[in-house]
Image (cartoon, rainbow, N blue to C red; front, side, top):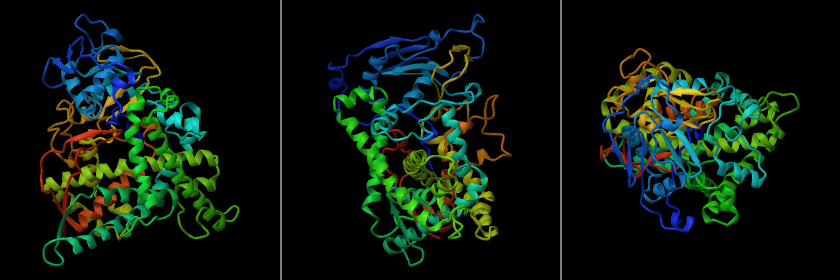
Length: 549
């Protein structure tokens, strides 16, 4: 499901409000000198070629100061104007890749009110996570926090820190991360994935071309994938189906998907400007953002009330959740029955899980179908393994996934090339040394996933789509001294994505049933152009041809 915790990035989609209007002046051209190159008119100059790793000792053997880290300009407000004027926000992943190529494997960046140190080598990322402490912190999405504060909503674990975060997270882990919980919710995800494929089969047979039984249909599957992600999320979290695969899905659910997309789109520009200032002046951007969140909370509140009534009528005091009806009642039901968290805290976390469980699984599935479609040999290998595993599983989805590791490799490979969140952030609790530069405790350091995933210093043949590179018996495809910290799309450690197990299994199960039912191809195998809102997504939705097997 989600990952809203897969790493947060800074980006912006045009909102009809120019920087000139926000700051009262037209942006001016400018440039700055850095330790390793020059930024002139927004274009990086300096040394070219692949990222060059700097060893742990400088030329004179001393540790370099924080101020000596290469940077893209010290004035955050000038940089913000440049970013906005040159549309760098929507191409932030490409900007990072170019900057690493120009400045080396570490650089500083100040944009508006945000400052960060950016890194991409696994050895440095390893050092960063070693210093994350007992209560790891990532960048706070202040627009989200401000919305909760002014609406007087409780915050979920995504927005909490310290001991309060840890206490809540440990309770949530029992229902969404532990193996017993996965065993309970896997059949629900499998049911939705099967229904999706049945719906798609009927559509191909009705609208497709070719002889009966072997028809094919070329479509943009993204609307259907969004409906699948929402249906699956609701089934696992609320324990109920909402009927999105019917011929006329509810307007309420369509509005929820729209609200999530609007929330994601309006978040990034608010990261660089004080949200309360925009609230005071009645900025349209803030109004759109707050309205989107209000609708998300309203949708969640209605589902929670319905689930509460259902549980109240079916459970007697002291009974086990779901025992009265002999079925799993979803994450919400489990949390309510156990009573370890207050109802307000449960509502906050369920709402965050829902908001983070649609785009963040639907979009990677688009990329997965595209890559499998344009790599038929890879598709055939994965399908062969899936067929063998499914035949031996007796219909048990957990056994089927365990016997098809290439499915998991496919998801990891998709997220290597197209990470949902293009960075993972941490604030080290002690001073650390990265690339022989001193990093003070409390500095925001970002592991930049998109440049790392496509770096020839980290991966053999980085642009090749190869799910088998993640096999446990494969040592090729890995470069460098540190063998871990290369697959971080869901984050790492205690603060990794709380919906990780739901998301991983949801995507794998859908791909499994699609590969059992269809052969995939693409009308065009050209590389997809990508853009960043709060998540990485295709500029134009890829069209996929589904041919019944």
